[in-house]
Image (cartoon, rainbow, N blue to C red):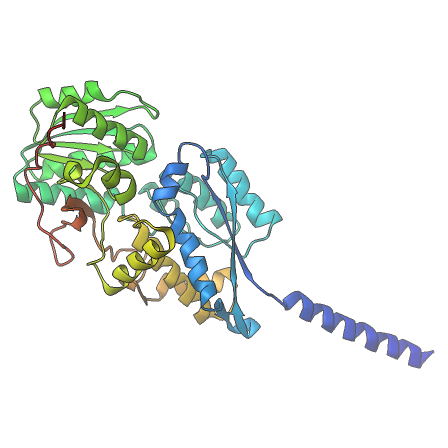
Length: 403
């Protein structure tokens, strides 16, 4: 009997060891993402950031995957996406599904500032790393989330840069309009004090609702105020409407700046044409001249998708993912906290150059803050060594319509 008991214990221990090994076995890294594949934001996903995540996964897998010492091999990456239908509530529910039900290894961000603001606390609650993508807000700093890393630049650095550019070129007065959401309000409120610091008179500052169909009253009001610069904190639909109506009305300003739109060569430049958008400024910025890695990314992106990447976040997201991969490889594990700790303190070389996060876990080595279309290229016009071209001022008149 004693021998049978001992034999039974031996068999059980062998089975337990086998099961433990089986549980530890892993053949891929699954990354989940709840993002707008339909609805009003889907166009933004298509032109700004959405494809970068797909390209990164493809490139990682072409190289055999990510090496994880704990498993002694490279693991390929699978991107598991759900459509949040451009709805914040749907996005938060899907994010929790990815974490709690699907038990994905990591998560990628949604699209849009308000969506990111809603996602970050959820990821942090479950101790999942969330690397910020298309979106960013100062209010996220107030939340102090150890598992959230902000990648994109936003009003905190862009508003002062735009004000400095305006001062440099001689802008004396401005009109500011902004979308009535987290992105628009934050940017709209940030521009005014920075302009005033640089002795630029703000003659008009007004918000407009999401989904607006006619911006001509605000355009005409700015024109009547005789301002040098017209500034709009907008998303792509509002920016396209604004540009189209400026053209239709034949109203031009010496400087025109839109936050979320001009960075897109495919939607903005190619829709209106390079001669039309000449001199228009926007949030960003980078281009193929920014670094050797930037040039390589442009080439890879064009070869894969047949179009250019967006010239605001594209290089940022790509480089943040390269930083993330190196953090995983250094940690040698898929443990969220160990990887998080490395991400928070380590600097790695990436396509844009050295990439690291500051004490608030915000990426600060931006390749550019403000871009401007010049001869078909979205040039970085910030003062400083990252500038790729001097700003054009005044902005050229709109080309005359052909009969």
